Image (tube, rainbow, N blue to C red; front, side, top):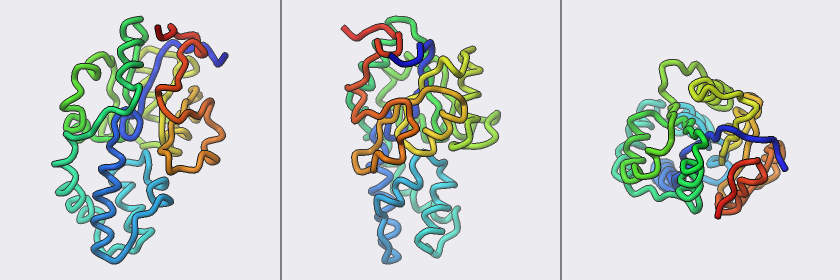
Length: 223
């Protein structure tokens, strides 16, 4: 048994929705123009980061001759038409619907901006409407992005929850560090290409949301 949980908070990209494959496709296409390669190490480095931070890391790491603003313009040209194709990852809809049925408060805490969030979620209203709080990367009350704990603490405040009774679902190192710094329990479901070793500080590491057992956290069991 883990700590008893009263509130559940989800990251979105790479956790609820498979947007990471879209990002990887677009970032690879851009850096290839400059004879560079977007590899797994770089994918890990930008996971969970804001768009601006991600662009800066890619530019600095690969010495791409673009400003952050120029890189983001190129990225968005390729990425925006793909957002509506993002698929829900296995087990996510089922868990959200199950917890909603049992009146467990749920939230999303994502580095994504509101504009991007709405584009990604356009075909997922049926289950995303079951989530009470959405704290996003361009929230005016948010001072620092992940790995700082701010987004999770602000989300807990909006849920009227004790951070120590919140369970965070994340897929990134930055997200894990943010959740731990907020004194929350954290389940990590990393991209299959990621080495699990860096996630050893997580409360639990799973291969898929389908492996999650709510009863281990004193939440209602799946029937």
